[in-house]
Image (cartoon, rainbow, N blue to C red):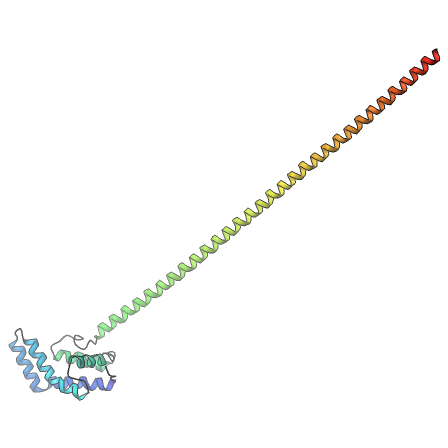
Length: 219
C-alpha cells in the first residue's frame, strides 16, 4: 500500500464523520435501526459504503476491499495521535460499532493495558536475562572451583608420587649401603681370619722349630 501522512489520515476520518453526520444519512440510519431484522447490519454497511466510496476515491484509494484495508492500515500507524484515535472511535460509534472494532485503533485503556503488558514483558525479560547471567556466573564459579579442586588433587597426587619415589630411592640407598657394609664387614672378617690363621701357623712353625732344636740339643 502507499504511504499515508498524518494530515491525510485526519482529513479522511473527518470526511467519514461528516458523511455519517449529514441529516440524510442520520435519518436513513435511524430508519434502518428502527426496522431492525436480520438484514440490519447489511443495510447499514451498504449505506456506509455508498457514502465512503467517493471519499476513498478522492484520496486515491480504490473503493475495493483491498483499498479499504490499505486505508485502515495507513490510519492505524497514527493510533497514538489523540485526534486520530478519538475520531476513529467516534466514526465507529456512528456506524453502530464498538471502539477499535473497525479501524483497529485501541482505546486509551487498551493502549495503557498494552503498555503495561509490554512493561511487564520487558521486566520479565530483564529478570530472565539477570537470572541467566547469575546462573552463568554461578556455573562459571563452580567450574572454577572444580578446576581448582582438580588441580589441587593433581598437585597432591604429584607430591605423593614424588614422596613415594623419594622414599623408594632412600630405601634402595639404605639397602645398598647395608649390603656394602655387610660385604666390607665380611671382607674384614675374612682378612682377620686369614691373619689369625697365618699367625697360628707361624706360631706352630716356631714351636716346631724350637722343639726340633731342643731335641737336637738333647741328643
